[in-house]
Length: 476
Image 1: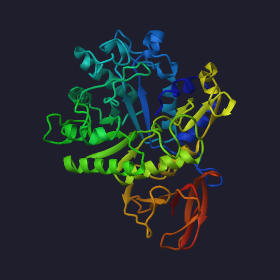
Image 2: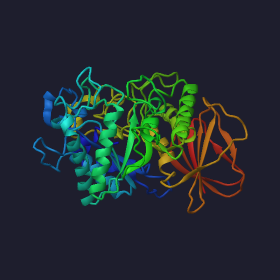
Image 3: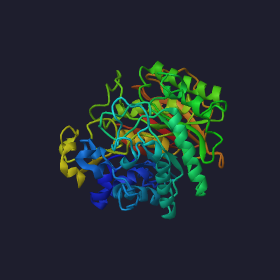
Image 4: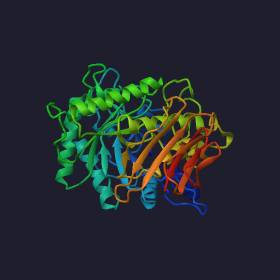
């Protein structure tokens, strides 16, 4: 997603640096040696913010990097010059061939909210929108979709709410809680509005704070068990028959990845809940970064641009795709200035190297600075660059049982039009492995390791070598 740093980087940073970052994220080109120039993301998330930037200090959000501009003014007029930095990256993604775009909202425009803020009042778990402004909120979101459509950028998906299970009352950022019944009301209004204007944009609902809120009752506060509520045809909140509603539920992998047996079990539960309520329903993992404590890379605090975080996340991607059959996997934010494991590209002013412990907070970063790629960026690219929209996961088994903790993880993907196969292999161990693909043809390898960033090589014969602590994509 473009939240939140793209608003400054895309608007103010030198053009050459913006272009270089856009290449890292979106490019599908190869250099003269066959190495990918970027990770070729196939979907880009555009954040529709609520207008806390215009409120300034009165917004109650102290961190200016977590405020956002709103296209709609309080008099219902529009200023399409706002969100200029995010619009720059949106156009850069389109220019580089990104296939699909998603607009997402986590709070209504402040002039439509219950309390005039971009976040909720303490103790209130209802959607922070005035009851008489639900229709206006829906109209605003569709107005933005239509504007981009007219400008040549089709917004394929609209995600109208985010992590409604959290209370969002601390004022650290925009956000709102919501009851399932309130979300049902908003989805019905959005469905009708999109249909009325003949837009093909699909509503993707959920964005649950953890996948447990999708699969079961957690607190019994009418904010959980969302698969059953929204997509079981017998539910009073069923939305699967509404126009422009995608047959997809989305959730976030937060707080379900450690210990590893919990990571596996939570995804098995999610898959079971989908099968029990609506077997045709698709699942998207639509947001993740490192939050919870664990025994491998500790927790989110402090940057790690190296392989430990890349491998930790690669295992989560693998399990989300293979255990609960995620049809899309999305990282939280593309660019970060924080001393945290939350970005793909890291910003700082150079005064502290790339640690970000001090330099990430300086005022000058709104205008210029240094940027660094990460091994996580390239490991994500082992998936995003090669597993393209429309490809299908196929059966792939290893002859020897592997440890989920430090063994070899493999998934396989097929292009249904050409029959071409793609394998993604994660060697979590400390020694090289020889893998027999069962054929003697030449294959192409793209390796991410401590010394490689999707580096291209070729191999012939029965066996290919997978380096230790590496992610390798194999294609023909």
